[in-house]
Image (cartoon, rainbow, N blue to C red; front, side, top):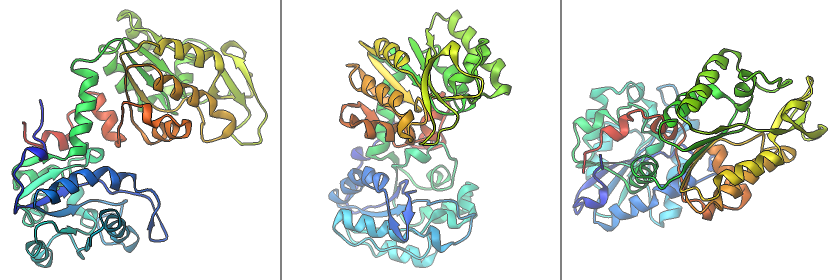
Length: 394
């Protein structure tokens, strides 16, 4: 179901409660990566240009439900002010009479940032009273925090019981549109690439996708659980013994559905991922018992690249190896290049995958890069996300 977007609202003279995800890394009171802040700028500017005033709410870190200076949003307000070129005052709290007075005092085109929502335990408890207090500062609710949409928190779900209309911000709307293209009427064939360390993190996802995609490519540490489930010795490579049965079930389901599920056929192996470790490339059947696979090999990269040629849609989550280390990066870099050159609509998500395409220098050739992590995976697993369900239908 299409959701109401902020660009369909008449915002003139209104106060907008804008829920964003400014959970950004800090170092010494300075924002070290403002990607999530810049991602929300189009929605903020749209509201300001529409003659609204904006009250921004976000969480930062895990302050355990009480004020903690190291999790203050003060550095974020400073960085947002620099990016917008206008003052962004920070309220001392996110609820209460003082905050309400500051919000009422905003003129059109002005912004107020609330202090960390998680300084109150009621936020994560989805407390209705806390949500009522948050709603008191605004006339309209806009959610631009897709990355937190899988959380049933007060500023995401309960607040919409008291503040309507509830609309998607421009970033949220783009996320839903891009992910919708994968399932609604995707260009075929549809291939999904899954990597990362643990198969347990992706089991629900691959099971859900088997009925919707035309092929699955599996790499990263999670591949070894599948390979061991097939009876292959994998040396000291990462394996989840308690997931072997589930991996066999996925393989059988893929066979029954006639969906190719392709696993690596060669690996870069070493005693450890340390930069100085001696490494070599071996075939699947030659992994030494005392070494571990830390990247997919060139033959696998070639096979994966061939599979992706002519793809209509590609979904990628998870690196192919320990790409942070120079000696084990080429597999992930090769897949990044293959995705960028496939010719179809590509969607990637997850911090490691985003870092990989940035390192490979192919970011501009990716169809859509999701800002979300857990929400991205849960949406693809077919779960109902509280933050999406709470937004008004279009």
